[in-house]
Image 1 (cartoon, rainbow, N blue to C red):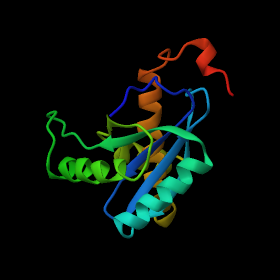
Image 2: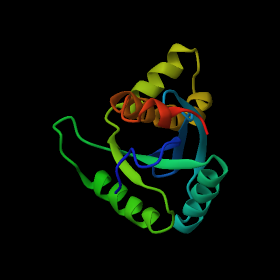
Image 3: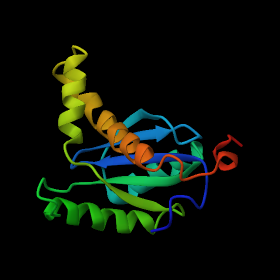
Length: 155
């Protein structure tokens, strides 16, 4: 895994689930995260091909993967699966990848969608992308100022 500041530009976040992957993207200044899409999982190979196309289309320079950490700060079976999946992803893309704690992001995303009056299918269809957005925004906020003003200017 590479340092976050080697390449200025857009960042993507993935919220990896058993059936769906939430995707969020930053702006070029790495200030604001926005939900992008929800990808239905298929084979790892097909998933990785989709990511590669998405990352290329949006000139992604860094990928953040939500890592499920327990409230006690431990990594369980799910985190081991995420690390294994991400290790394989890293062999398919030439972009630095970092992990970021995703604790309670799905709960927060669901609550936010409910607060907007969304229920049922509307929540299920968006919750993963919103969770990825929360992961990415948390990462961006924690790393604000890591790039110099010159590096933050859109190219």
